[in-house]
Length: 190
Image 1 (cartoon, rainbow, N blue to C red):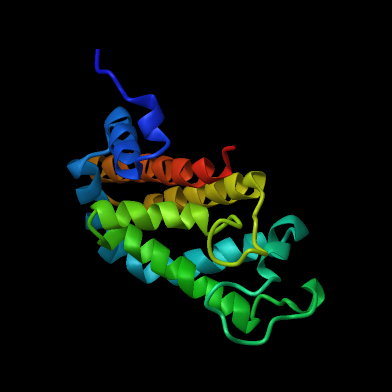
Image 2: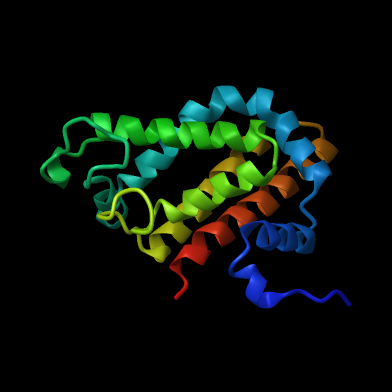
């Protein structure tokens, strides 16, 4: 039986990620499956991003979080939700971020820098990083991650990969998105 330093899980990001990856069985074969899917998934990123934002736009509980100025966005901020349309420049700015995130998932090495990036993805949705005005409730982040996971699964299933490749790719993304979810949830604790 392996002993885990449980307090260290809360203070050492690399240790936490290694533990979770080991526990879930997320390893080199999973990274290889995710990277191998990149050529097929890359052309689909814009439609996946559009689907995510179309879903977010269907609820005030999710859409309202795009009203405050986003960190790094220098353009005009809409005065209210009625003026925050799906084609608003601030939404285009956010869509670019999501697109880069999805591309990073399928192209970047899963090293310390990537783990820090995944952790920042969680942190940036709270008032602990980026804009102090943005604090997306955990229920909305869970809803988003559930939707993104389903969208990724549907996208992979639509690639018509050989069965073994499809299974390996789906399992790899499932583990990865659970790892990402943990690196979101941890910023809501305490």
